[in-house]
Length: 253
Ligand SMILES: [Zn+2]
Image (cartoon, rainbow, N blue to C red; front, top):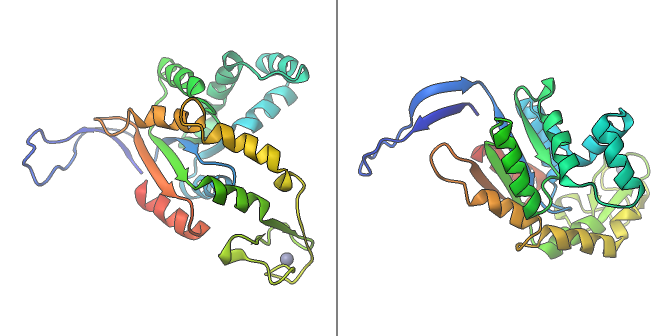
């Protein structure tokens, strides 16, 4: 995608409605916020977008780990909270994220995954991006029913021979062959994390909360979408196969 600053012809009767390009700012540039519940394939789609458009795929969890490992000032502050078992406040998290988004590998754009997690963070991130003069171009939301998302997590199976052999008892396209790997016939096992139903319910409880949780954060940006020069809000049906979701995504970008 090429980003333009443009306006549409004022005549509402115009059948053309072609954008009048007044300034082309930068080639192949897009800054994206990515929303989707655990189990929606968000990580997979993020990796595909990163390769296809050569943008940085940034996961908020990785930012914490890097700052703490790198011994940055913000990392040291974050560590104090984490060590006490407290949530790291937005006053630390958001500057860390902005620092990350300014790095060289973000010159073609970035895809931020895992933040904001609630509406409050969305408001603060929006303010901070504006203050830093950084544009947000696209907000992506993968829509997937909560029950299906949970099944997809709990249905994952690991192949003893190769971690990259996808098997999932709840996804037809990658259903195991009986109790064996569908690719190589290897033994299958479950990851303990994937079977922790309480943890999954807790995370999904935050995600699907449309009042103050993660979906409320997504909808905060949706409210700004559609106007002139504004954010493009894209929804994707997360139910079909990875390939089909990617195809829908690419066609909408
Ligand atoms: Zn296998």
